[in-house]
Image 1 (spheres, rainbow, N blue to C red):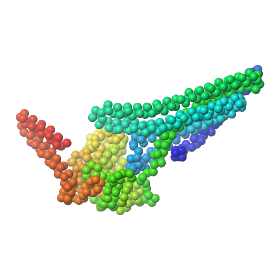
Image 2 (cartoon, rainbow, N blue to C red):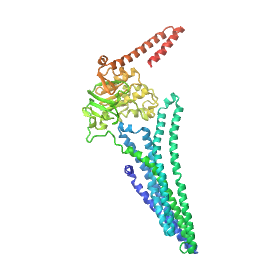
Image 3 (cartoon, helix red, strand yellow):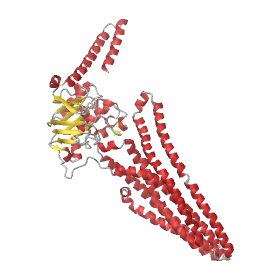
Image 4 (cartoon, rainbow, N blue to C red):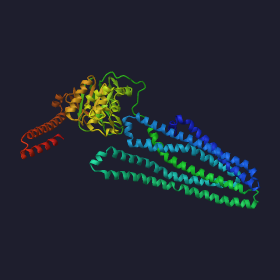
Length: 615
């Protein structure tokens, strides 16, 4: 774990090394001051004049100034090293996440990754800062202070040595009890962040269902869990300072007794007041170093769990990676599934896809329909190698997708996913995800083909309109059309639309499909849809059921051979005919004599029914 984290120091290695060296110099100066002070006291006691003590006083001032300089320099280098280390660690963690496959992402929740990038890295940064400065300073002070105390007080200084094991045992017990609590609390931090993230992203639903009180209670419960665990940990850690003060003050009492007795019995020949004063001074320094060490142990204990969670991400191997000698060119848009099976986990009880044998020629338009959970999205995810097949082979352009360079493959397989995502930035910025070098004219053309220009041109700033995070300031249908335009700009060899026109009306859906056919005639198009009307003009239609291909054929062939397809088409067609009949009746009534109250009432009723049928 230390080796993994240390790799993020990199360009901040110099200040990391300089800090302990400067601390060493600072401690050496500080430890010399009490020794010089003891000599000064003895000189004054012997009746020295002001002129005689001035050189010694000057040495004390010089030592204090030099110590201050080294301390300030150590503070500066320590801040550079710790902040730079945290910056590099965030960089490494975020970049590592970018290499993850969907399977890796599934292993970590988004709220957990946010906690690791923020709270956990802050904890590790604080621990790193303490380690390179205080963890170096405290042991040095402890050793120097004890050596100097022995030089000044002889065997009396062994009182300090006797209390160190007692403090060590007490601190070890506290940390042993507190560590499991810190391990638990960070998992609860994840739950707390998840509650906030879920509430904020789903705020419209929360308010529409008047669930604010429920969400408040859920958040309060998660927050109370975190608070309760931290309270337990703090109660344990609170024993640290009283225990330390008791031991050190007890040591002072013993030293006062022994020192005073020795001064009196030897008449200050074996031990004098200056030595006793210095022994106390070094005792206070020992006390401070022990308190600093205990603080370091507590912080490192807390940071250890954070470091482990960070290393889990840094050490996670992407389940999908480039081969040693990848293929970098996709010949065409042909797609072949050779007896492909897939399950999301090695421990899963059933296959998500089972023995898929499918061959699609380049340039074909393929429709895919099926019930919820029939694995339509799973099927197309294997084409862009978002997941790898558990059994069998998926080929694009005649080459196994596992032999391609990932970037090359995904540049030629554009996907408009079921969950449409837009990012903070202008509309033009979002569309240029498809092609970073796209001109304004190309952007307008793609938007026109996706029927997005119908609403973009209505915005005051047009394509410079700002999109909020997640596209929260545009409707679902507008978001879908922008995502389709973004995919069109890539001009891929394979275009996958995963239920990406579900939020647009049938007329707009038809216009989009016509635009795709004219703009990308040679591109293989796979259209997943719930509406039969969205796929009935496709070259072939695949009917999925339970992770298998139930039927495949043209619209006319499936009406004759596939019961699932026929039932779906009939039910949807019946609803459409009923809605059209109601709307036609409503129009006839509206054109009648509106002054007749009975006719007006009937028209209102039919209009209402027409709305219900349409929905």
